[in-house]
Length: 161
Image (cartoon, rainbow, N blue to C red; front, side, top):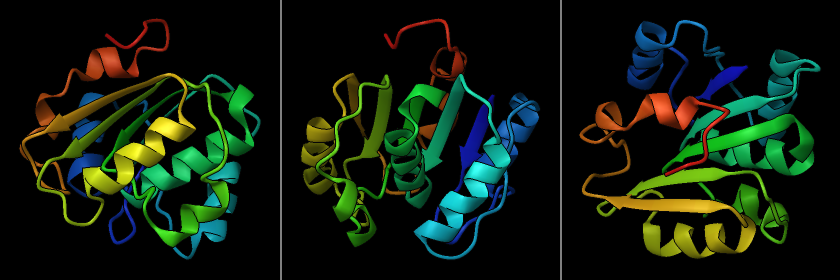
């Protein structure tokens, strides 16, 4: 099951959500509101008992994906994190965890919301199977996002290149 988790002030029908709707119609793009615990409860409802999950999380959605994977590592096949908000205070209680789920993290060099200088050290501590790409973009990743190798990133059977 593929699930896109939008950012704090976005929706499943934002720019990234529309991109996935067009190219990956099987991907779920639920809307989330509230704090982290409310969003986790919603994600648990959306995912049900499914395993083999591929979670694509943007900004606060990346934080949500990471916390869900820490809570349920056997259910998550891989994570694709786009400028994840691991530097937000909401993540502090989870920052000591360790996660072996294959994770591809993309973050912009010009990101001032989730700066790579803050997020990368946290990610290197938490994820034991991490590919981190620092790209020429800002927090929204609008320049880079459409050109990412989505078929490979979303393929559960292949390792990250």
